[in-house]
Amino acid sequence: MKPVFRPQRRAMLMCSMAAALALPWLQAQAQTWPDKPIRVIVPYAAGQGADVLMRLLGQELSSSLGQPVIIENKAGAGGNIGTAAAAKSAPDGYTFLLGTNATNAANEFLYSNPGYHAATDFDSVAMIGLLPMVISTSAVDLPVNGVAKLVAQAKAKPESLNVGLPSTTANVVFAQFVKMADAPLFGVKYKSSGQALTDTIGGQIPLVIDTVTASRSHIASGKLKALGITSRNASEMLPGVQSVADQGITGFDVVAWDALFAPKGIPAPALQKMSEHIAKALALPEMRKRMMDIGVEPLSMNPAQLRDFVKNERQKWGDVITSANIRID
Image (cartoon, rainbow, N blue to C red; front, side, top):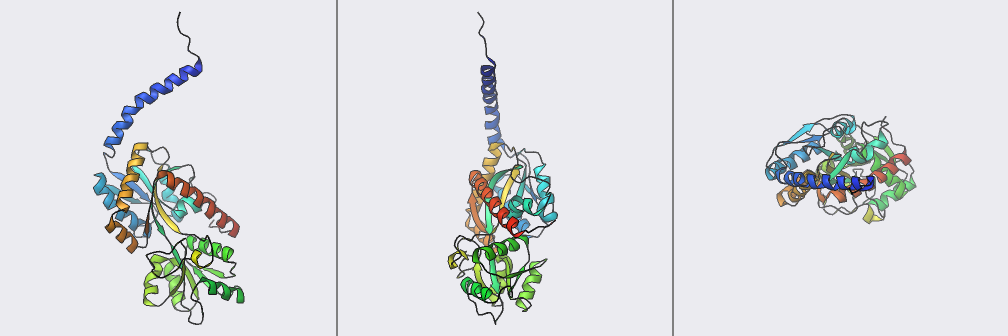
């Protein structure tokens, strides 16, 4: 009498056979990947911070992986053009995205149609680093040395203290600071860091929120006075400057960040191997120094940790952007 296979049992057997057949292929791929050049799409112009960082990291990855890591700049629309191109690329382990807090957390709330779905179009590969912002002043007639006195001054003269905001990240930092500190400051939007910093140093506006990278040379020269850094903790990049959170605004933590992503469906061996090589690169003392020199604080996260981090960041950035009604289009 022939055995009768129920549909469920037949399906289970087929899945088991497929898994058994796939195992040797996955093992072989884990051993051979990469066997050709790797492309990393940077959704910003050549020479910008994200591009400089990825080229620095790409040099080390090319050496450790034994294949060229080619940086492809696809700038425009706040990072949306390059990110959309990466989302549509084949998930074969040879195309990656240098993603940021803008492309993978904020843009879906800022743009009506960014051209991709950050939550579903990508697999998380590895965190690379954080880019804290800093609140600074050059006003000699503003008697503040930290966040508490700044808040007190703002409450004494509501919306009379202008704050230069040269980026979307600065706008979000500002909105969250005003909300959490209950500080009635007045935000002034700028198109570039250079213009905002020039106006602050020149006395046209008393305050500015910008990256550590853009601000610290002016802080070092005494042209600006740092009042607080926006990461949860103080940073080696600005010794002696307390975080906003450590100055009474408990829980304040709004920073820019860079991380590596892949089109959804990348083979697990390629994802894991790339993640491991990035972690090894970030642990190198020379790499750490060079990243800190360009204003990026190295932070290693594996794929699962990055996935959870980005999920929380999307929630945080989305809440701030929506409540402050920040829009780009």
